[in-house]
Amino acid sequence: MLKNEAAWEQVFEQLDLVKELDAKGYAYVTAKDLIKFREPRLMAKLDTQEIRPKIFRKHCLTIFPVTNGEYIIFKDDELKSYYNFNSLLDDADIEEYNPARDMSDFQTLSNSKISSESQAIDFAYLVSLLKTFTGEDELFLTIRGRLFSDCFDFKVPNIILM
Image (cartoon, rainbow, N blue to C red):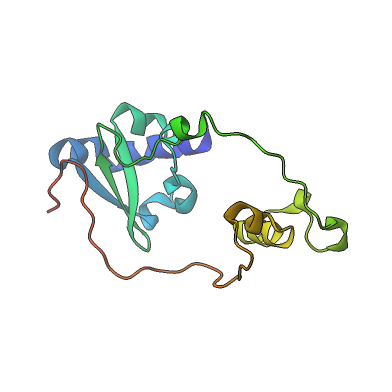
């Protein structure tokens, strides 16, 4: 069993989330709840339908962050919370990108040692991949790091939040 699978099984068992989800259609969990089982950011990063833990798939569940350190788990029977890219990409042509610039000039940034999103962006910027992809002649790197949004409302499918 994968680490996320095992951690979520324990969370659901110890917090009795199925009972709460059956009663209300949603349940809140906090990073403090999750840290007892595994790193919360790893547990809550469920970007696609396919990588959801078995217990999420069994009960048709989705998870969203609602504040820093708080998440809502809710029933999403039609999986409207996930965008299905598969049909869009089925007919897409795959192109190999060969950078004009020799990357050996950059001793501190090697494509075999990229370990973060910001390093991947730096690499794509340096080799002009971003310019090629966007078709823009001039691009500027701007803000780095984690940012927070202003408050906003969102609707959870078929649920009235209490």
